[in-house]
Length: 428
Image 1 (cartoon, rainbow, N blue to C red):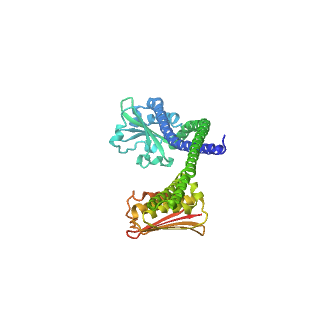
Image 2: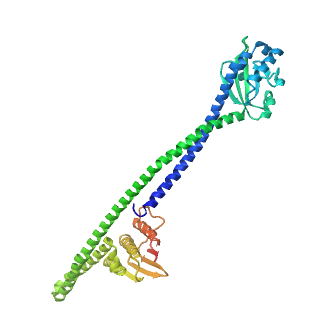
């Protein structure tokens, strides 16, 4: 295992565990909501089944037409049956038996027996069929005034008929705590199973995540090593090319320049202009090659010196008729700052030659109070900075990115007819 790898793998595992716990938490919350809802529905189904059982084995066998007519003996006998077989359950607090004309023919609350209450068409439809339904009871209705002290109740009702064929509706009122208790029991039975399964799944995947993190780390390290080898190979090749150019072509051209100077001293007068022109072209080629060496291998800049490199950059401008001025008073700057100033000057002079139509350009490098400053000024046509198109002066935008990466500031001042000033400030 390579140095630093345990920390990477550990961080990956921490992220995995954190994400797994978040996922388990979210799924658990969703499961709680779904299980509570399912538990409530299951509890309501249990209440319906209990009511259906009571109707089949207690209410229907004891129900007679005499009970519906209000015969006292029949009602008393029916009441004893209901209290012993139905109301013995602590979950039921009230039962009622209705006829379709809105009359309560029986209830364990004697004050309701014989009372009439208006029924809606929907209520009367509930007297037919064999379905058992459940809903939260509306305790504000007058017929439910004696149940208000029990709090929220679940009303379960079923339709049935007397032996004589009279349709009636049986109602049983369950405590809401009965529904809640059944719901919680069902929830407890399944929720812990779900939570345990989720945690077990996360634990099973933990070794897989560990192995995957190590493989990813190894792959990343291999790619990093491959990239570094490619960079090193490129660096070596650039160094070799720069060395060959410096020790070969540049030195040969320097020898040619000296030979041309010596030949001019002994040449006939008619050959002097040709030899002078050849010497100038040779020296220009040497300067261009030196600039190329800096582009190919920036350490050449540090070896040759920033002032010499900037002189080589300004030489082609002088050859084009531009008045140039260079002042370097910065001492020895770090290689990365020298490279940045070289790039900035190169891009600026390229714009001066190509766009500015200037007569004079000045370059100044200074170092004061821990800040290195590059100042480039020309007297060209200038440009409107605010009105530039997105693709205009793309090189300056790239230069701005390089300066920003170095922790410096780039300031460009220009206006039509007033030339351009570029300032680069970088902390040393």
